[in-house]
Image 1 (cartoon, protein in one colour):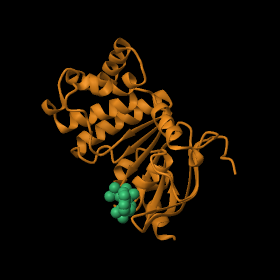
Image 2: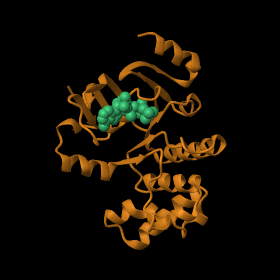
Image 3: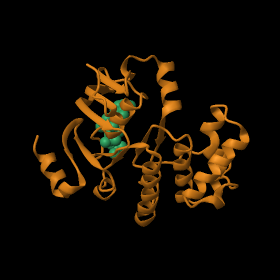
Image 4: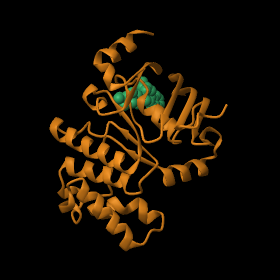
Amino acid sequence: MAPPDNDVLWARSLRCSLGGSDVLTGVSVGVREGEILAVVGPRGSGKTTLMRCLSGQAVAQEGEVWFNSAPVHTMNTAQRERLRRDRFGWIDPEPGLVPELNGWENTALPLLLRGVSHRAARTAATEWLERLDIGAAARKRPAALTQSQRQRIAIARALVTTPSVLFADEPTATLHRADGAQVLRTLTAAARSHGITVLLATHDPEVAALADRTVALLDGRRVGSVTPADGAEGVTACSLSV
Ligand SMILES: Nc1ncnc2c1ncn2[C@@H]1O[C@H](COP(=O)(O)OP(=O)(O)OP(=O)(O)O)[C@@H](O)[C@H]1O
């Protein structure tokens, strides 16, 4: 079965076991182009695993994943790596920067690995750092920066290639509330202005409220889909409905 035309990502009946435990038990989801979709659920509900399957980092034992008209679930490892490198961005809760590289070098790394010229990569990296309010961090190494600055560099690094889809796994979990909210607003504004589709895994309803739509997971199952207009009560109702 092919995915609907207006879904940039589409998964059907994903089943995934890890270490003998069922982590995803038949999850289906469609993500529309340019949409910001929150994947919510308590810790251990399968959010990260779902994002790893959708991004081709992991392959579910059963089910299908399509990126546009490409079947990710039948790609070999090299094809999936190329897809991730060329079309996807990923943000982890922890920045994971290279300690020996300064701010702009860390940000520019995905471009340099693609063979973009040093000058062009530096220009693009600097623009993203300024957009994320950390232009001053461009020449500093991670050890000289705050956690907030380091995470902003990780976000700039994920955006610098202007990916088709950005996977953000609890991207502000390690930041203070106000700082995290500002970073998220900047991230979502940047994604919207560049037409980047975003999947945002979070257990925080305030973070999910920034998304266009929310899908909820519980124990590896879909338990609902709400838009912000439905409000937090909608999430609760869906969570209890299955
Ligand atoms: N590599 C693995 N081996 C065994 N079990 C795993 C592995 N990765 C995840 N799990 C288990 O799968 C379940 C779902 O994990 P996952 O990280 O996908 O959930 P999550 O909703 O993202 O949680 P969190 O918010 O804590 O990151 C958890 O019970 C976790 O312990």
